[in-house]
Amino acid sequence: MIETDGLTKRFRKGKSDVTAVSELSFAVGAGELVAFLGPNGAGKSTSLRMLTTLVRPTSGTARVAGHDILRDPAGVRSRIGSVGQLTSGSHAQRVRDELRSQGAFHGLSRRDSRRRADELIASLDLGGFADRTVQQLSGGQKRRLDVALGLVHAPGLLFLDEPSTGLDPQSRENLWQHILDVREQHGTTVFLTTHYLEEADRFAERVMVMDHGRVIADDTASHLKAKLTGDVLTLGFATPDATVRAVGVLAGLAAATPRRSDASTIELTVAGGDELLPRAVRVLGAEGIEVVRATCVPPTLDGVFLALTGRSLRDGPAAASEGPDTHGAPDVHEAPDADAAPDAHAAPRSASVAGDEPGAAPTGTTGLPATDRATTRAAEAAQQTGAKR
Ligand SMILES: Nc1ncnc2c1ncn2[C@@H]1O[C@H](COP(=O)(O)OP(=O)(O)O)[C@@H](O)[C@H]1O
Ligand SMILES: [Mg+2]
Image 1 (cartoon, protein in one colour):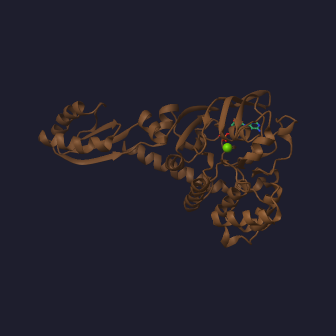
Image 2: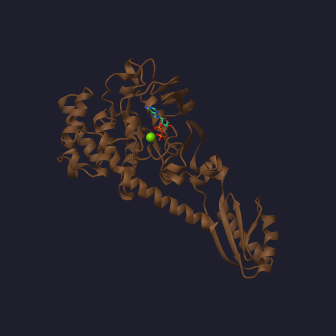
Image 3: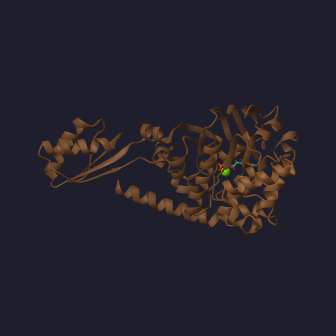
């Protein structure tokens, strides 16, 4: 479905060049659900914008849904759906009309546009407010409409740029269920970006970790976690003496080195900790050493990012390559790209590309406070986890 070859994008910033995306080479097969995960400024949107023909690469190319992004951008656009980082839709239009016009835009007959709008209203659960105007919708409802708009022409490949950013947890969950449903019903290939670790972990089958314009890991979340981190086992003992003896026993049992975190506690980072734990309790028991406390904390994708970069993805914008100005304010890059070549790429956006409407800029910033809150909560959670270790 997607095959990229050395895809690179440099932007001029003042007198210097910023390499937003560097030498991206990967393939995505039909039906895959892939998440691009990385901090703000990592190059996720720029990658998507090249793949959806909104930005022309500085070098390299890609085949998307059977068409070359440089030689046949129109072909690419006709075969893909794309939902940008900003919410779209004309604000004064009603939801149902918005979907119908999008259908007409794609060349569907009046009858087919109506039928398709009804289908999408049902499948994305927009029925309760199909006669409201776009501006009356909540953030979550708008995002579901965005996804519906991206699906009007039944594309086999759907790109979603931060579909759930700024939504409350319940709306995020709900949006995800709809994305998964669409995919299951139509076998749609889904390529999305997110900076929510939990989302990538739970829903994506394949996670590409992006940092400073490069893909630094590409695998299933469980493989990444198993390869780069492990379960943290913590075992507590009644006496320091028992603890010392337990270190010896555990050293023979696990591939990892047991560490004493205090006089009566041992920690171990291992793969398959959930299986090792009962075995360790049994073996220690047979040696007359009683385990009085035990926990097994599974690895997280944040641990993976930390292992790869030495930074925590949860640290938020400060840890990212960009300052706070890019955080939650994606609209600065969503304006038509001055850098884009004056050829097909700079042409008015095709109907197949929902979202990213130049006029829609202010709506993108409405997610800012929620995003900030989420980041703060995530940072707090990370701190707590860190404190336990
Ligand atoms: N149109 C643009 N002009 C100049 N710099 C840009 C433009 N778009 C993106 N960048 C820069 O490219 C880098 C990657 O940005 P982006 O792809 O938006 O990252 P992400 O989506 O991962 O947050 C950042 O340093 C950003 O400032
Ligand atoms: Mg982005």
